[in-house]
Each structure stands twice: as C-alpha cells, then as structure tokens.
Length: 462
Image (cartoon, rainbow, N blue to C red; front, side):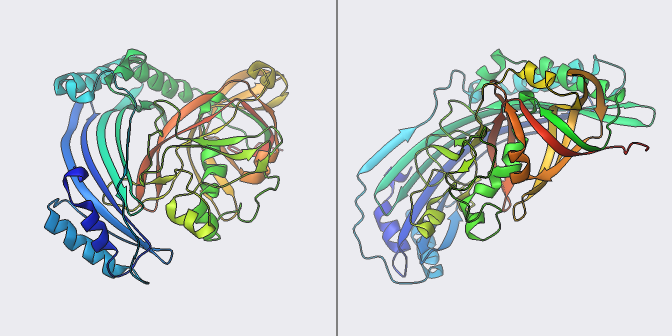
C-alpha cells in the first residue's frame, strides 16, 4: 500500500510546520470472532479494517492523527493537521527511502482458508464437551478469534518495514454451581499461528480442562489466610512477572516517576536466582512479531540478570528522552492509536532445581497451579493476584484443593524472597491493557518457591 503512495511528500508535509521525526503507519486487519454462550452462538463478527496513522515527534512530544480515507489528498491533509499539532522548528533534513524489510512467521493454514461454518462448529463442540463433564456445569462461554494484520511503517529516517501477523485464539470459561457455592474454570490457547493451532489442542480438550477445574473447586475448602511459603507452578503462567515487575520496567512509567524501579539501574532488585527477559523473537509466541508498531525489529531484552536491574523497555519516544535506542517495545492496538511502551513475551528464566524437589522442601504452604487476574500499583510495587487453582502443601506433598485464595505483596520484596527456581518453563497468554489499548502478550515462569507471602483467604481461629 505505502509503496504506491508518495510517502516522501506526506512525510515532508507532516514535518512542514515543526518536528524532528515523522512516521506513517498503515494497517490492514481482517478478523473473525465467534462467541458462544448458553449452548448457542450469540455473535459472529467478521470484518476488515484498513487505515493509516501519522505521527510527528517534536521536542519530545507527540502529535498523532489517523484516517481510513487512503487517498493521497486525504493523507496530505492529515499530515498537515498533525504538523500543526507539533511544536518547535520545521524538519530540514533529507528523506532517503532506501531500506525495505519484511517479516512474519510462516503459517501452515491461514484462518481465512477455513470455512466459517467449521469455526462455528468448534465453539459448539466446546460447549457440548464442557457440559458433558458434570451436571453441575451451569454456564459455558466459548470464544474463537482469529486475525490477520498486514502492516507497513515508513519514517523520515528512511526506514521502510512491513510485517504480517496471524493470530488465533480459543477460550473456554465455565461456571459451576452446587448449592450456594459457585466456581469458575478457564482455559485458553493462543499463538501467532493459523488454524494449525488446533493440531495439538482441540476445543474439547480445553473445555474438559476448564469444566473439570470448575467442578473440582466446588469441593475445595476455603483457603487459609496468613503468611505462608508458596510454590508457584510453571503451569500458573507468568502473571506474577507481568504484574510484579514487568509494568514497572516500562520506560515511560519510569520516566514519569510512577515506577518503583526508577533510578535503580545496576541495583539488586531480586534474588540472585532471578533473571527477567522480554523477548519478542520467540517463534509463534502470542506476543511475538518481526517489527514492533514503530518498525523497530523485534528484540530479546535482558531486564534483570541474576537479581541486578540491567535495563528498561523502550519505544522510540522514551528512548529519545533517555538518549538510547528503542528495545522494540513500541506497540499499538491499531492504526487508530499511537505507539506506547508495552511488554511482548516476558519471562523469568529457568533455573536448576527439580520442580518436585521444590515442593518437597515445603512443610506447610500453598501450591498454586493456576493464577487468575492481577493488578499492581507501579509506584509502590504492591500487587494482588487471584488464585484460580490452589492446593495445600503438607509435609512436602501437594494435598487437598482450596478456593478463594489471593496473593498480596510487594514486587521487589517478593522477588527477593524467591529461594528456588525450577528447571521448567510454562507459558500463559493474555491481552494486556494500558492507556486504553490492548495488545497480545505472553508471560512465562518456571516453578518458583517464595519463602513467605501474604495469602488472603479464611482466617483461622486462634
């Protein structure tokens, strides 16, 4: 698309009034969403959205506008409007569009090659499989989503990038009920893959896992409350790394003074056993890509190494403010939104301990197999996580399930209390929200032992 336009003229118009840098971002997004509930398909969405966003950076501030009118006249008018929103002196350099690169992971079965009726059938199959698990399954929500995003970015530095991202996701959420007790079970799968995603995992398998978890938790007793050792299974995904430290290492929050990790480069912020990495180059992971929303190539960034804070995640604007290079973390939800600093695939690197030995080392504590949602105050580092599947540990053995548990603590404090790190690694997927934008991410961690953390639940009688 952009190669058919006079992009140099558009960039020069964008920089005509003021600006140090200009960028044009084009996106063509084809997507399908199928939402099933109460044993029927409630909604089917299938659409294509195309548009262009133009950004000017001037004196470390941003002016941004977008349109879905892709004619040259419309884009020149948009560029002029954005230019008037910038401040400072006009750009006086040359624009030499000499660098063209493209990327994207090979896809075996593109979702648009699969009939809509087959996708709808998958949602219905998941519903039937979940309800067949137990009569106490009362509600089932099954969701199928796919998207194919073609993007191009060109800027006043002469960089021209294009990317193709194909994503497929399937989610099952189940509500179970017995008497006055209601529980939920949730199981997702998703990746930067096409329909081949379902060669390894079927909708029925996801549905049975979600329903079985919801039924099991009906019989679980209320979690005890207090300070306990906690073993986080690798199956729990990376909710903790995402919330407890990930957001706090986004450079825009650091620069705004709203991160507990501000001014701590080179300092110890975690146990010697902890290395934290953000890596957008992992093949097919949900948060991966070839180029970020600014056209910067995907990178692997070591944020914490052996407990020492090594760096932050940057987009182009925050990197300009700190006088460094972008780490490829400039992401945007669509052409309608400006790029901001975001995580991609964030993980705690595996260690050397056998996960079974980690559990055996705990006399009494909590074993967390699945995490629910979480939130963090990035200023203080304080967080709260829900536990969707947890068990008591007694004498080094995982015992009976418990429900209603939460984990509360402070990110740097808890990361210093990790005394064993497993040699395994488990991934979780999600959509991360920030500043009104949502982008696909993945999080991962090995099995971890936290020597003491506040567990919310039912207080024990003294």
